[in-house]
Length: 336
Image 1 (cartoon, rainbow, N blue to C red):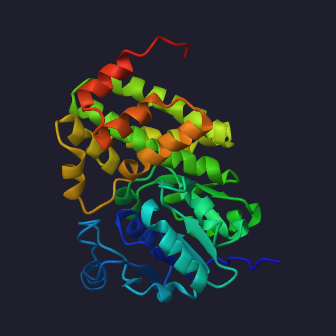
Image 2 (image 1 turned 90 degrees about the vertical axis):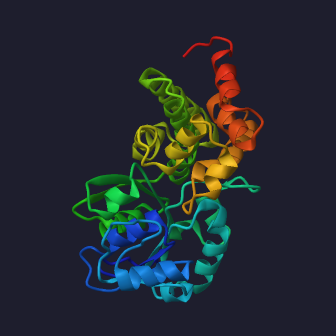
């Protein structure tokens, strides 16, 4: 019988970017116990501990005093629950290390949104190589790091195969400004998060090219149709795709330059080159690293995703922005 995750037990965070820091703030609220956060960059850990601010990734947000940054992942070894927030393309190494050091009852909550290149695996599938499904959960939904860190009202999906442990996790993570909704559709929650990042780049391009709000609304709607097609083909539930982790996250990310993926697309639409834009950023734009994998998944499932394919073509340098737009608009007419 699995050990219950009691409220007040130790929570840790693996990943010191903006999202990891924001979730660490959530964990620290209402807790007097130290909340360890594993950070890769030594200077970032020093800034968190001494300045109470993640200067590089979440500037301007004062961090709770009980948040303790470390460059040693072993600091998470006695946690009952770890939020894994390393970017998708770096997640395998982090998950493998956590699987070695965590107690056998500990839950791993996967908070990165993306698909691993090469294997074409979502984070839960990747983690399933190292941990049993009963110890995994996925947290996803419409949530900007700065809003979550500031304690502004946020609702997310928490998906877990084990509904009992999932409900316990919701209680562990719930705060006055942070409300998790329980789901048992792990893959559905992940598909929404991965696909919306690619679609947000497309909506950013629309903004950068000044193509108008009507174009952005159409792109968001047709993008959601692509998300649904892929999700249903891969076994996701329709209600998950229409919920917080699917449509909810898509609406947020496709409407604000606060999104790293939207702002990447906006810069592309204004004439920038993908490699130049990305080389100047500290934070990862998951859509840029997942676009190729999402399109490969679509091809494997024989699902038509022309908007995501256009984004992948632009990022890979196969088409410029104008050509990609022309190709999309010149496609044969179809039923909605």
